[in-house]
Image 1 (cartoon, helix red, strand yellow):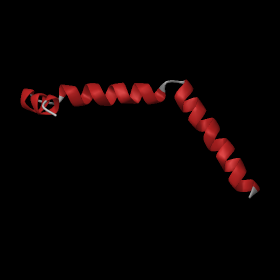
Image 2 (cartoon, helix red, strand yellow):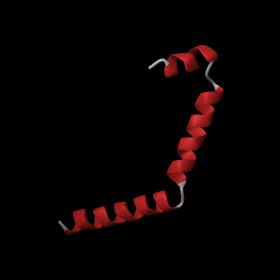
Image 3 (cartoon, one colour):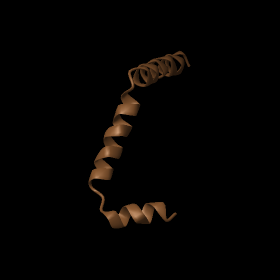
Image 4 (cartoon, one colour):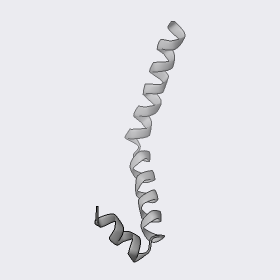
Length: 50
């Protein structure tokens, strides 16, 4: 039980650092810009039709 509690604390600390440094936002922006650059006009129109 102590090991599980410590694992939760360590995972929480890792998640805190991940969010604090902006890694999640940077990854999302890189993925979005890569996705937008690789799309054609037809697929953009398809996305906005929903």
